[in-house]
Image 1 (cartoon, rainbow, N blue to C red):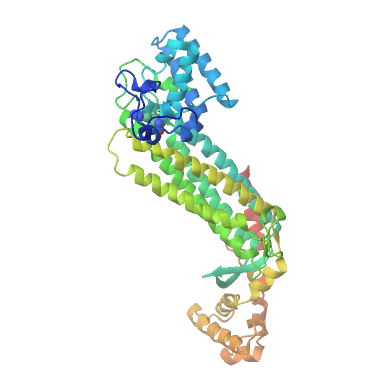
Image 2 (image 1 turned 180 degrees about the vertical axis):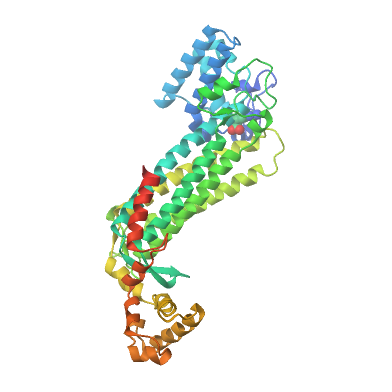
Length: 476
Ligand code: ARG
């Protein structure tokens, strides 16, 4: 950052008259504190490419409409190209005294091409300009995130195919419930991330209306062609109402909301990885690339990346709550409060991108201890439901009755300190005389998962089919 003011804190800054937005209205520059609270350049400089694209489309339209001359249009266009190059080469000096990316570029354009630069801002305002820039930025972010979520889905589907028949404990209340397959468990996340992609796509569809030409708030008296600029910038149509176009940020809120839900999904998976890699579970081993050591305990392999994904969810949830709070009491139309929209949007895009990359890497590289999973799957009488179901099927008992009998058998096994399958037939018959040896055929965890063939169920054959369907649906 250049242009450090030498004026006393809070006092006027008479040396700086460079900001074109102050025009002839002011006698002195802003106070130092005013400048600091007002400037957004450190944040919104990331909009530079979109700002330049928007300006080029606007200038071309002004020429076509006969609002500015062809020569001026060409000078503006060439100047903007030059500025883009300079920024990308790191040769551009961003100045806080010029507030934001829009004024920084406009001021530089004037240095480059002189007075013609002053014609660019005809029939537009920074209010429609910034709303257009940010929509385009979010649109690109949505496309990038869609791709990143898809990569994660691909990693999950590949692991699910490998582990279609790997039996693990299915938990409710974090307690052994019924055996499931690891592949089935991973495909649950593929569905969640599929819906996340749907939310990103919805957000993209709704945001794709162009504010440019709404002016400060009321539209413009110049004969502009909003259809043309909208089209040139990849929008589906111009935004219908000028007040709405400059003063609503629901596209940013939707982006943050979709991001918040996605990061909650990531955080849940991260939590499971933390559990699975702990020695209590011992189900999963992360690769060295996604594990950290301890500075004191040489034996440690810590799942820091998973823990950080879990924690970074907090930032994104905070970003959503923060921007909702910024917007909630704003009267129409634009207010400077809205300048605070960019930091949470940028941070959410960056955070989500990093979390997705980390999660994709962890999932892709992780190895599974199938024996440990299988052994744990049998703990906690997890085939009790299979036993009850057998009583319904083979003996024709009502399910409630079967539930009660099974409960007594579980208690018996618990007292004897053994599993359900370790009870002998006589012990079983002491609770329900009609039980036959056939019952033992449903008490194994493999038999349990293999029997769950209902649509969407955990049977290995289902999982193979579901993985193929997910590949087709999400990765095609
Ligand atoms: N930097 C401003 C923002 O991000 C641009 C719009 C400024 N408009 C204004 N009327 N001061 O919101």
